[in-house]
Amino acid sequence: MPKITLSSLAKECGISMASTSRALSGHPNVSPAVRKRVLAMAQQRGYQRNHLVSTIMGQVRGARTQHFFGNLAIVHVPSPQQPELKPMQQLIIKAAQRRAHEMGFHLGVFSLGDPSSGPITLARVLRARGMLGVIFLQPNSHDTTAGFPWDQFTSLQIDYDSSTITNHTISLDHHFTLVGALERLRARGYKKIGLFIENHKDERLVHKWSAAFRSFQENQGGIGSVPVLKIETMTKPAFTAWHGAHQPDLVVGHVDRALLWLRQMKRPAPRGIGFFNLNWNERTRPCAGLDLRPELHGVVAVETLAAQIQRNERGLPSDPRTVMINGRWIDGPTLRNSSASSPNPP
Image (tube, rainbow, N blue to C red; front, side, top):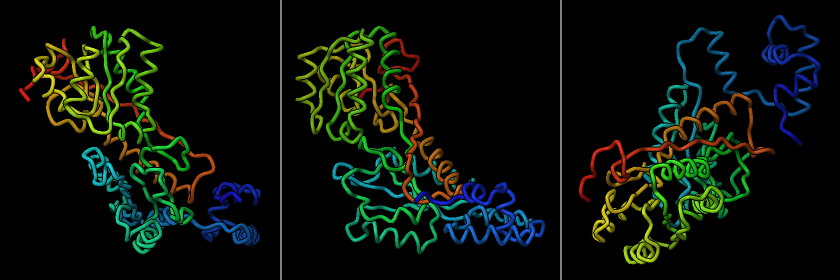
């Protein structure tokens, strides 16, 4: 049975949402008969007042100056390959906390990685701390959240690793972000571009990076046909062998240690070869790359969660929605014709 909302309750009562809300709050302008009918229908259909809206309206009516509306949680879901928070995840959390504070919420940080704090234990902690909504940070699909009582919370997730999406999601548009970058790289004169990526990174993103790259090679063209280098852990011998076999004029990947390897191979960027970082936010040395907009992920997640709370939405949605965020091109000293200064020696 679909969850009853203020809108659906108003329709069943045959009156406006405003009148229904006033009836539920005991407003004197609503006749006793209408109020009695609305309350009876609400009880029959299991309608629950929205705590956030009640708090806000109480503050408006009381002309209070306090602007605290409730507690939210962001939950890190680790994986064997990424057990700790990555720099990009930390940026997401900081931006989410700032936006939550601006909107009158407090955002606490939790982890689902400890075996002693599984989904059921986590839910008990979240209830005890009065959490209205929960953001799951880059969950995996290996039953990590199995048993979590979704119907007790408003929730969404940031990113996904499965084609089966069960919750509202905030995610980078990996395909068009990379396609846009490849178009610009091609326009810079690069004709033989190669992608190198570690297996676990590509798998966690349902192969969105490698799929976008291969699609561009086959359909848009103009960047050659260098095969994708995918291995479990990127090493200098594997990278050097791949480079030697295919001789790309530009390489795209997460591992910017490749800049050091290229220098040792007498092909320093940008003179010998170009380099473009798939995740500029986690760079360890100056380079061009993609800003994956972690701060915007955090901001949009909090704003979306607050809107869901306002609509009194709990549980997993019947029609999950995904908000896609575009990455941003960052010029840098590892590309020819760059406006940036020459790179520092690795």
